[in-house]
Image 1 (cartoon, helix red, strand yellow):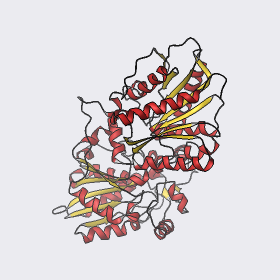
Image 2: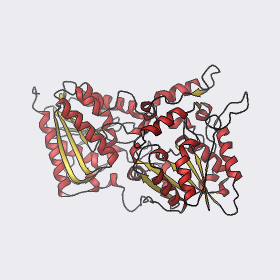
Image 3: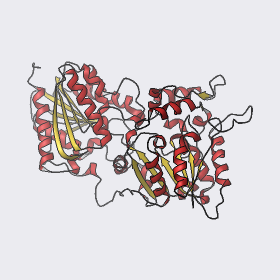
Image 4: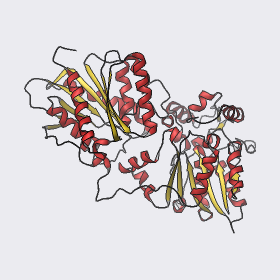
Length: 510
């Protein structure tokens, strides 16, 4: 028999698991929802502070209450709940047969749960208040349906279930978020399963792509003991898809699931495969974090600055400006008579958009200041996760910006990205684009969560009458230039490049 131990996320308690526990029990398993102190468990002793160690002790008590002679224990942590789940599993590793990360992060030793809070401003405020005796000891729970969306997608959750979630929500003790998770390493021996909720902005394809970037933190995910499932729903699958979640948990306990492909040393990952066009090399100069690919010309030429996606691990090598796709596009621009510029910006984490945007703005000024560039004729071209940075330029286009291009871009922050402010939302900013031409390359086999942001952008652009040309690649995937080197893909790159270069115009024209 399998005994599932279910640990809930922020502001929630055992009530969120009621239908899932009933279905697991009906399937012949045991199910134990952990009552966490200060949420829906009993309050801690008077004068004591509820912290992460308190919740780890709550989970340990449930593990120790289960007769291990004929039961396999599967520990499930949702959202914040993965922190106490991991802490307990590390101390009872021989007792735990599998850990399920249910739409959660991957915290390591020394990392507090605060790092996973999606709102950056809230993270900074709570961190600043740490140790302040006058600071509040609890974080108020969401009070409305809209406030829940700040903590994760509510896609699929029925209205009455959201009403109940709100009514039963409890304040989160801030000590549970601020205290670092301490692991001895014993938990590394326990097999794991990741359950990704695509409605919240994650997918197996995205994780595989990040593994291909060489992120050291993700190397362990190619271990055959690690499996993955996807659920086409939002961040609270126990409320939106209890039947689907139950099925996935039972299959995870049986060792089923998708296994990631290792990055073989003999075959480059997709982002390092050859560019699909045979483009002649151009003279290349490196200026700080910007590379210039120069055309043959005596007079100042227009420029195209290419902005890579991400997040890209800080120690990834080669860096994006040496990736075949970006150098290929830059050489195409140079062959067409423009300066092709590529910037290495610091989008290493989802919390880095502000500094990445600052890097891009500085790179623009560096390019425009070069005497070989016509500073009044510049285009910006964004890729993939670099798309949100385009919002700054759509919102207030300068006169010298002649075109903005985007290729398989993310054009609205995904629900789990924590970009809740007004910035970095291209689908909103396009209303202020005015006459700025936009060239958008759309792939037909895009990840659904990204495709939805593109359609949101196009709907907003149509409503405000923005000048958008769409270059479709019907059979193309994300990163089609190296993944799908077909005639269709080649023509799409050529068409997009012609469109951008044409909009750069002649000196003195708009």
